[in-house]
Amino acid sequence: MGRIYIDDAKAGEDVVFKGWVERVKELGKMNFLVLRDRSGSIQITAKKGEVPDNVLDMIPKLNRETCIAVNGKVVESKFAKSGIEMIPTEITIVGNAETPLPLDFSGKIDSEKDTRFNYRYMDLRNNETQKIFHIRSRIIQLFREYFVKEGFIEIHTPVIQAAGAEGGSTLFKFDYYGKEAYLRQSPQLYKQMMMASGLDRIFEIGQVFRAEKFHTRRHLSEYLSTDFEMAWINDENDVMEMLEGMVKYTFEGLKKDGLDVTVPDYKFPRLTYTEILEMLKKEGIDLEWGEDLGDPQEAKLGEIMEKQGKDWYFITKYPSKIKPFYIMLEDKLSRGLDLDYKGMEMASGGQREHRFDVLVKVMKEKGLNPEDFTFYTDAFRWGMPPHGGIGFGTERLVMQILKLANVQEAILYPRTPDMLTP
Image 1 (cartoon, rainbow, N blue to C red):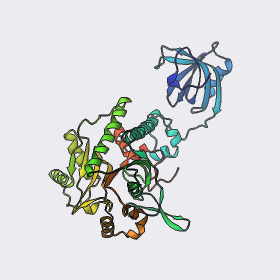
Image 2 (image 1 turned 90 degrees about the vertical axis):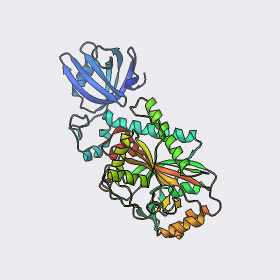
Image 3 (image 1 turned 60 degrees about the horizontal axis):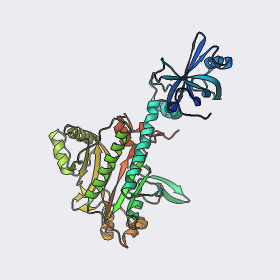
Image 4 (image 1 turned 135 degrees about the vertical axis):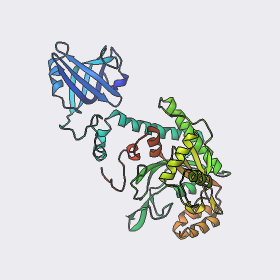
């Protein structure tokens, strides 16, 4: 008789459940216990004369959240919501819980965010909180399925790097055997280098780090970035089509799983930066040409697009001066792109500059010393095909799908300017 999860139980089976004590109740000659595991909860009913006396007497003495193993028989029940309950034959305490508990995760009492994150392992005992991470895991799985289907291979680039992809102001610097090194802002430089290798379709799902002292609901100092890069493209439209396909595939998968999401059934609008400035101006928001879009402007754009029935939309043709050195430029414009979902940026990318001489020239114009990047620029000297790709904020997607108040809810242990532990 082996252990099974509660939601796999069927009436008539002799089983072992292992989980946490959710609550206990004494009622005359009967004692009740609600046991919870990751799949759900079940009532354990002990009636005098039907179960061993030691089992009957043990139940009222159990502290909430104590880990126990329960042997018994699953039977039909008219009173339990699931239609079944368990009659126990043996209860074993395997991990006693101290009292009082440091956190009430039941939802009956609102706990401070810091308290919840300090005791995250208990916070996740709430099934609704745990559900976030089941869905997050499924999203990542669907990303991988899509990329494999489209002929991509998964790679893993260094987290310890000698130079940053987007300049030094947002880099975490540390000592590396007496040398200056950084935690990666992005796998950008390495995934571009792979385009010169013959691995012409690659993806990576991994952590990246940004030393930005933001205190907003959408920023993290460490997050999970989903990146892809593809060679032999015609222009940035090939990148947008691949990214749009990834989103639709993911939402179709979540819909099949029973999640309440709307699968986009339209071609994502391609809005130019200049068009967006005109749209915002009609709403009373004036931006000078060349200014980047901030949170308020992106939120307002989301409201405008929602009225048109479009949750997803691309922003294209950004001014070249606000895009990184590796994005291909067209005079004052760039071949960069962003993908927004309900007023929040999800992905950023575009066509890359693949011509060695132009790349070095732009680096200098943007105040970078190409000599600091020779490990990267050398890959462009001996045959680099046209290529492009994106970086996608995985936690932001989870946040928007589940309507979470803060992106910190979509990561197990958030890292922010104020949070280093646990």
